[in-house]
Image 1: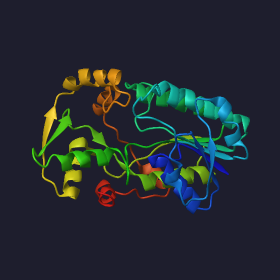
Image 2 (image 1 turned 120 degrees about the vertical axis):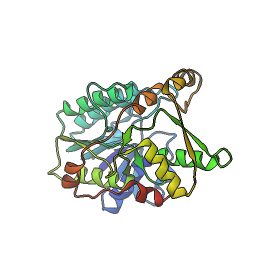
Image 3 (image 1 turned 90 degrees about the vertical axis):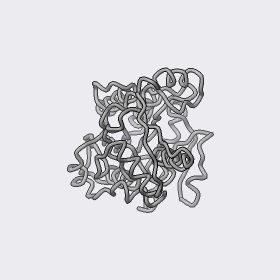
Length: 296
């Protein structure tokens, strides 16, 4: 049986659905507040627990041979810090996995993770990766970039913004919009996680995965407008203008729409070479425009 943490999230439910379709027995570790109904219709076990409370994990790991750990955050909300969720939470899951003597551990990291990362998001992701590599467990680490699909936050947020600017016809862009990204279809991510979990030849390595298109943020917006058939003007605003606003939002909002870490990451390219991904996982990832046409 496989244990999936974060199985009710956007990426998680796509992975869980594929695992069940492939005939795998799946148990999901969920908190009391997790929306279990998103997995309605699937033969899935649920076990209540919290990765930040080690004593709640033991029951979830009973009879488990493979763990897929997906829990992560892109912004800090209500005391859930990057350090707690990415680093401390991962260490707790690894300890429970060792105690249960699982056979394989699959870890979701993020593209751009590296020891000299300039954002706290990537720094804590690196700390989690190091804990995995030093755990003594058989592991696979996957680093996806922005993930797109029905119910995603990224594309749908900008699509909503574009739709709502029908009067001004102006879309504000933070910075020059030249940083390149490599969005990947959520179904392709699910495929890679499935293969990592069941293929014995994929082991003890970190893989960067991504879509076939390395495109700038400006090109991403242009593609969304093209698919929506909406003509808009992009207005570029200096990143420095948003730093005080992001700081204020972090201090006053329980769920800030913008934070300083996101501003840092906007300055960086977030791309990779997917040659190894296509060979190892036997996949031809879906182009960005084709992906968003399926749900916009």
